[in-house]
Image (tube, rainbow, N blue to C red; front, side):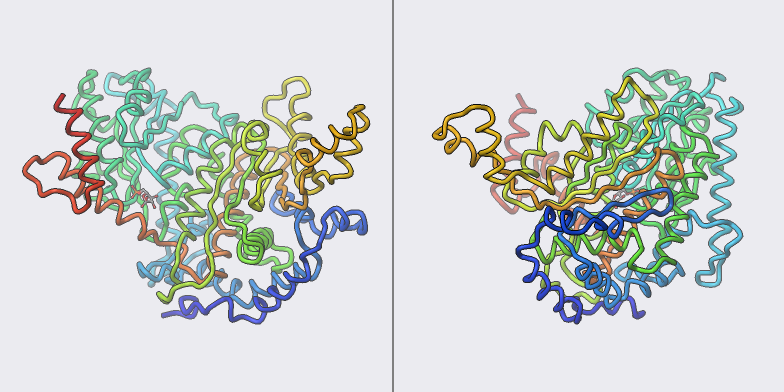
Amino acid sequence: MNNYNKASDVTALPAWRKLLDHRESMNNFSMRDAFRDDGQRFQDFSLAGCGLFLDYSKNLITHQTRSLLVNLAREAGVEQAAHAMFSGEKINCSEGRPVLHTALRRPVGEPLMVDGRNLMRDVHGALAQMTDVVSRIHSHLWRGYNDKVITDVVNIGIGGSFLGPELVSEALAPFARHGVRCHYLANIDGNEFREVTADLNVETTLFIISSKTFGTLETLKNAHACRSWYLAKGGTEEKLYRHFIAVTSNRQAALDFGIREANVFPMWDWVGGRYSLWSAIGLPIALAIGIANFKELLSGAYAMDQHFLNEPLEQNLPVLLAVLGVWYHNFWGAQSYAFLPYDHNLRNFVKHLQQMDMESNGKSVRRDGTPVSYTTGPVIWGGVGCNGQHAYHQLLHQGTPLIPADFIVPVVSHNPVADHQEWLYANCLSQSQALMRGKTLSEAEAELKAKGLSSSEIERLAPHKVIPGNRPSNTVALEVINPHSLGALIALYEHKVFVQGVIWGVNSFDQWGVELGKELGNSVYNLLTRYDAEPADDSSTQGLIDFFRGRHRG
Ligand code: F6P
């Protein structure tokens, strides 16, 4: 077991104990007062890096809080852990694997030796293979079975083989100038299959079967359905290779499916699914925005990697976001965390972050297998503003739970319409301002008085208008969403999740919890479809099986 994998109990660290005491002393801390008393607060609690700007001044923190939190990261061994990850140590201890999504954005000139092999050759070999296919499709050298140009790509994949590519190809839609539209087919649900294929022309459609394992039920079922669809609509077996590509680490399974050898793109066991958009799993992205832009995405992530590795913890964007999250989660009892991007093109960001964060840190044993005695990964949720303001922000402002939030907002819109961007940006800022300031009883009363209400009406209404305020948020602003800044933004959150995993002492890179559902899924399917099967172990499952069978018999 390497040093990293000997996770100690974080609650025994001196910094944790000091933070507990400090938390007591922060009971009456008021952000409003802090801003009033300290004209430097914004300067002291904001930071720029890799094209991103982080304002973390609207938090329940003082300078002392920051020092203690950074000390916690230091004492938990974040710096050593980062080096262990980047250098290829087997930090995924339950699967005995290195964790090297960072190698996918590393320049070819920086060798990375793991078990005597320079991984950069493999990484850049795959990138060259992607470049070749993308350029053949864009230049119309690669065509469908009857020589029509490829105009649509269907990515068949789920989880990490879907969410990252979908996020990026949609976030970078303004860079899609190559005439290739991306579609995503993820769920084992005929409704989705029908919707995705409804308007497609088989002659001009390319399918990418995207599965690290090539063993995922949903993906394989959809892949077979797409092949049947392709054949039924007029495609030929002989020219199937012009319409089906696979990205997988299970080469043989892809060949057995009927994918031509040259059409199989590699994946490696040292890349986790939720961290794989930087690999050939990102092929739909490259087809949409071009390989040059895809490389820009990688370079943005690489810039964040370097920032994370080299900047002192006090000025380290992912580390600061991570420790602030731990502060609210473990010391203030916050159980969920909201992400509120103010940009339509980032509408799928939360879905990607949900997998990245919750599949990584939704764990209850430490790396050495001992149970944790504190809460780990929070519930991640959210969605685009302003839409959320007219839906769930009410709970952020006046609900009982404390929910820290990250606002994410670009300054420049790719599609300016009148003064919409000014309004969008203003709304983003005013939401974090409202969360921070709130409205006191006397302010509410004064407001009602100014409207001419009677004192009895004021007394009745004012309590409803009180907004507690003092609710924390970060704002991540960027000039514009482009491949470079988006790469940096996604990598920022990857490293934030990593740092939190290190602090909590969990293995952020396995996902055994998902496996039980898969196993039981198989056995329930057997019970559902085989009438001679033994009854289910519990009456609820059996009752619902009977309900299904009753409807299907009818
Ligand atoms: O849901 C579990 C999971 O293993 C994810 O971690 C992964 O991203 C997804 O399934 C898809 O896996 P694959 O790429 O192997 O099809």
